[in-house]
Image (cartoon, rainbow, N blue to C red):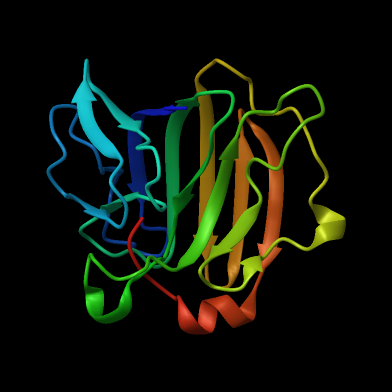
Amino acid sequence: LITTLLFSSFLALPVLADHHKGWTNLFNGKDLAGFTQRNGTATYKVIGGVIVGTTAKGSPNSFLCTDKKYGDFELIFEVKCHNQLNSGVQIRSQTKNDDPKERVNGPQVEIEASGPNGAESGYLYGEAAGGWMTPADQRKPHKHFKDGEWNKYRVLAKGPNIKVWINGVQVSDLTHEKIYQTHPSGFI
């Protein structure tokens, strides 16, 4: 099964930079300048102003990551994915020695279709960093992610606290000191 993930926009605002007057476009709408693929063999291309990621059968996880690193920030993006896809957006993530061939590790904001019973979109997972960061009792399946539609995510990372909204509904408010000690900044 080949699945597809589409991103229409990425905007980030450093939340502690008083001198910064506005948002930074992470994606220019034309090409993948400013991004590096890490791990796996999925393909990423720009079609009609949208980043399209397509899985490759048998490939390990693949990541399209910003070249720049971010610490405290607000990130807004829109995403649409195949209903059978489990994906995510890494934040404050890294690889050993900053080598793109090394395993990506760090916090991930979950992206997955809600399906008939709801899902865990917007919760935080430690990719190669300990598994679920959002405690089990807080990971209640929900249907804020609209299957087959564009979904707007907002992520606010400030210090050890990470908040996530999907389509205007806050789904996560997590303070995680341990992951912040090892991942205070990194790529998105």
